[in-house]
Amino acid sequence: MKLLYGVQATGNGHITRARVMATALAAEGVEVDFLFSGRDPEKLFNMEIFGNYRVHRGLTFHTENGKINRWRSVTGNNLIELMRDIRALELNEYDLIISDFEPISAWAAKLQQKSCIGIAHQYALHYPLPGSGMGLLTKMIMRFLAPVQQKIGLHWHHFNQSILPPLTEPNIYPVSKRSGMILVYLPFESKNQIRDWLMPFQEFEFHVYSDVDRPQYDGHILWMPLSRQKFQEAQACCEGVIANCGFGLASEVLQLGKKLLTKPLAGQPEQLSNAAVLNELGLAEVFTEFKEEQFYRWITQPDPEKVVYPDVAVELARWISGGRRLSPEELAQHLWRELKSEPN
Image (cartoon, rainbow, N blue to C red):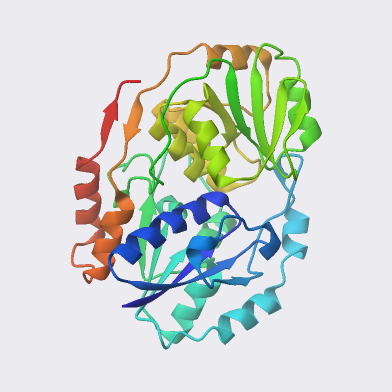
């Protein structure tokens, strides 16, 4: 069996999910070619597992000062190039197309009438969720950006829908708590803004992962270059995590039983929905403006229980290689029965 796996590379969570699926599909003897879009090739890192992957410009959004810049997002995307890439993508050699909300692979499959399934958090947003009131334009974008024949949505709760638990990378590092050490990943905020937020809290040590080329100490703030391995190590031993409302990272934090203080990217419907769900389920503290009293209230809360997710990647790989005999509803019910929690 040979697949094409399209990955929306605008967020690291999509790429992490693809890494986990790459391992699971290989274990099932499935041959996979990977296609990434939405990020410049030189900004991709730790990509060895994907072999000879392809990169296209695709579609992306532009941010400025923690907000979506709608004008730059519209003018910065080349729709003619996107359409050309869709029409040029030849799919005859593939038995199945998988799209992690990636438009080129999804639209090429639709035009060539190839079987295509979507595995992504975004496909869960097609269902009614807490706080997910989206405008007509947003609903149309979610529906038509990466259309697929079969949607496999992922979320922190099933909400009585055919939604699967998060597809996470297994933690391989010892979980501990280094008191006062806070992990920070806020890629949509400026470095100066993050520094202004964190500088008053001298009694804490902040490890901030950002677009720097080497570790840099700035008082009690340590700026770290992007590294999947180093980030995972820090995540396993920190006291808490401050991050945007990306689905993948929040899932990892919940899996480790760490406190999460999270800021949705303004104007980004997925992150706004995630913030509403995290707040509704009591899984995280949500902020839009960084305030001292909220930070201290958050950091002094008891540690949450660890959420033990089932191995969704392995189950999905078996489901795909076995011909997808179970319906998404049956697959979801099976996986949610495996969900557990552990005291910290």
